[in-house]
Length: 143
Image (cartoon, rainbow, N blue to C red; front, side, top):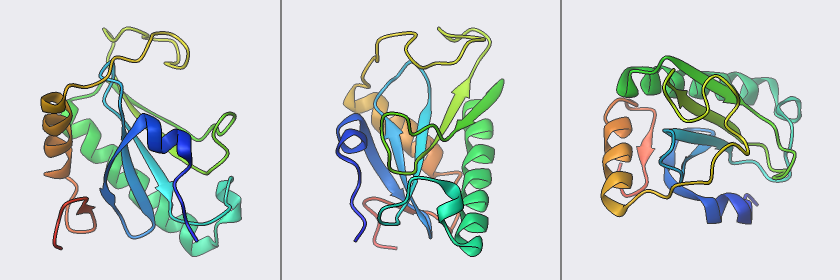
């Protein structure tokens, strides 16, 4: 049975779900930073998913990336599946700007997380959710 890793649960806000994946917002207002977590038990690597699930994850990642680029007018979208600290398979999608606090270096370990205010969090989520389309179900939706 799928359970979200405790670290992701502590550091992120659940935004909603795609067919395969849970969508999270990292609680760090330094960057628009979202994470896809396939809702599969005991999976730490993409190759552990079935071929069909790998294709679905790619579709969801592409859809999310397109929406992030459009919604937040990014200079670049960084996508990574590291898993060195959190073993559960999760794919980071980070909106990058040439004037962000870490550009052009990777974001990890550069700056202390700056948590969103409730208002900022709601705005970022609302902006993104409005562009994700019918294949996405927001957390508090009756869809």
